[in-house]
Length: 184
Image (cartoon, rainbow, N blue to C red; front, side, top):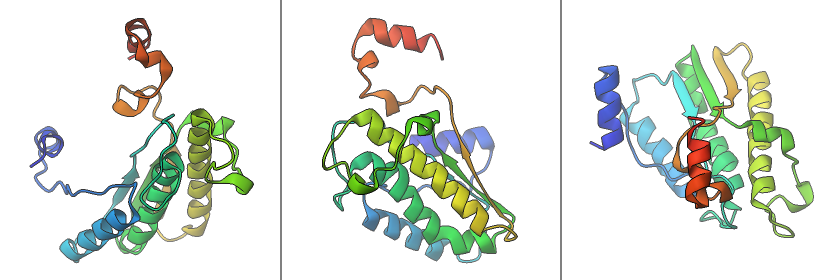
């Protein structure tokens, strides 16, 4: 049992917490996870899917399939996982999908001519694009699922103390970390 799973079980008093590896930077890992989930839970329901993994403002890196990492993990990974589990969510209705996005989506632009940021790469722009893609996916999926009993929402988590900020310049020095930590 992982520490995180144990903490959730203890806090929620629910021993039925599903915990399996799923690397959103690998479509094979996502497909394997969904297949294993469906196999292990044939008769069980899936009432909520929270797409909350993410990377932010990282140096230019790629998923195993060669997709720019922020777009690949923050959007494509969640898109694929959601679509692989969509029939299960529909069969489990009422159910919901929650996509954790960011207010950074407001600065986002979908670069159709350079979706993978091959021509130019600026970490903040790449992050904003991935979060705008989350919002557009959420809106379209919500429309498609009307009347199915599956609701779809996107949320902005606010400032949260997690490892997602590790590449942000302000966190590279003690005073920067101290200033931002006071917001928590």
